[in-house]
Image 1: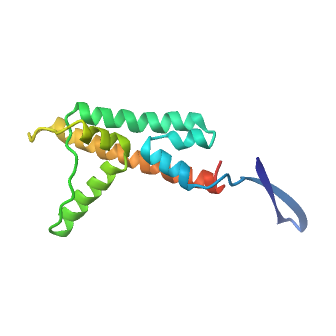
Image 2 (image 1 turned 135 degrees about the vertical axis):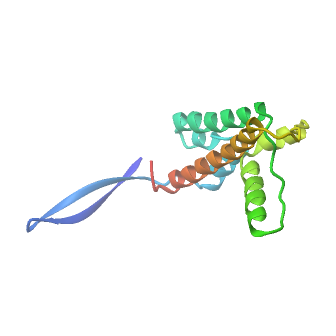
Image 3 (image 1 turned 45 degrees about the vertical axis):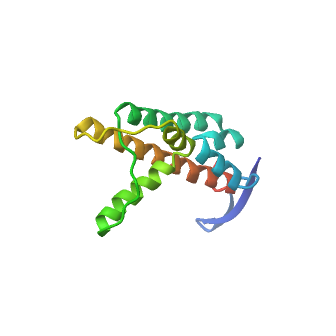
Length: 150
């Protein structure tokens, strides 16, 4: 249910009430965000927006599976100079952001071969992008749950 906010707008020396609808805040935001982290797109179903859930979850899942099919490697957190730390720790956080997909792949022993090539590099980028899409979904779910957007 949307709540209505009335604001006064001065238009050519006449007062006009302008009606803008904002989404009403739903229950807490933590459970849908956590659910989306564990299973990409699942929090949308809790917030009753299944089309967005299917699109975001499907996109994250497809990118993750394409990354695995290309034998992309997961990033491991490494430190050193600034650039190495940013690339490897950021890549690791993006891999972890895919949630259960990452943990299941690790549990089933997925380990990409250490070979050079364009396809393997693209696979790693697809795995990172799947995590970034899931982060985008978590931010979107947070805004929907807080009532900032519908």
